[in-house]
Image (tube, rainbow, N blue to C red):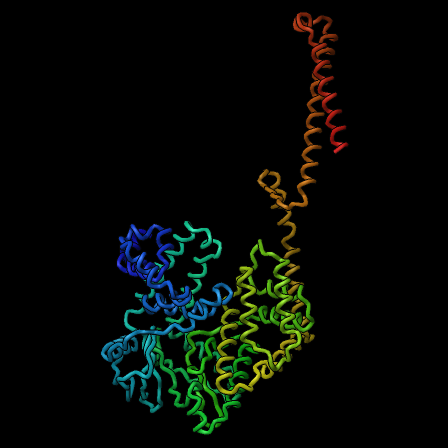
Length: 560
């Protein structure tokens, strides 16, 4: 860590300075970094004064934007985690904007030619110098392939990988340091969260990964001409350059333009909902950011998705838990709802089960009489994640991406046509999911899976017993009981063991005394010890006292 600090000392200073400037200097102070990095104390004071009127969420957003691309992307990814981040901060994180300058066409040309190992002229018939769009990680240029096909080429920002890796190293160092010094940081597993966010960001930096995501989703709609996924041109794609089919349409955030061009926004909205729920519930692999700027309307009421950097995955097991959750809600069974939630997430050992049941009851009652078509899925998801946050239930990343996707979807559809009910469109998928769960084939597969699992357990059982007995023989097995109800039992057992020990001592003393007497009698002569001291009288006296103490303790415990 010290070597990294020396290597990136100026970036450390920038990060700590910005933390302090926006009112979070107390954290840096607790970590002991203000003095080490020579941050002026006036920054600590002035930062707190000038930002008193700003909320915590606003200050977090502002300092993330000031620190640049890495922190903006981390904030954007963190905005998908309502289970670990309070709602007021999430509200600000979704406003994060990339404030980065365009990089020159000279840099674009250099990167493309290095990555494709050929000149720009040999790869493309046309390549527009002015970018179509720019973001923190890269920018997009219009191009035409030698075959005449139009393409959108995304080029990664120069040196962005090294910048991001430096920032991620520093963030992980700070998280480790914070966990060792600040109690609440360790309790909320900040280091694990930082590592998870870092992994997601590294995935976004790999453009080949984004291309594979696009192709997986494209296969889901091979037989649906109303949903279009742009083609990936792999011969012109690397980890830093992504070349895809150019989509020339109208983005769904251009509502007026859609109306002018004669699109039925209600049909478009329903098609978007259908496409997303098809991905989620039938295939378990879905677009993670379906905001209006990432969806384009094409002639014939066709919709096309773009930007596949963020995707979500729902495993068959997770879909099963989701089905359990839906069934429990339909049955209004709070215990089953809690069971489904705990199956999905990581529930802390010290969770207040009674309060968790109460919160789920309140949530269930809130939506008890609300018509299915009028329910806001965004609000419901937010409230469910709020319950998870209050009880420190960590929801798996892919499930939080699902929550974020549904929230974004609802916002997109609301802008297109406020009469569209997401749940009404999704209801057939939900029914299909439940029906699939109880299909004989799936039930048989589930039973067989459990059977083989139990078979493995039975097969391992003799070895487990052998290992268990081996540990017991070595005296290395430790059992710790902290259940309050068992304390009286343990106390009584302790009393019994003490008396038993006392009795054994008394019996041993008596045996030794009798042994001395019998030994002396059998030898035919009396020991000098026995003649010089009244050993027998003393021994009987001690034995009598011990016996009386034992009787007294028994009578005393009988009265208590």
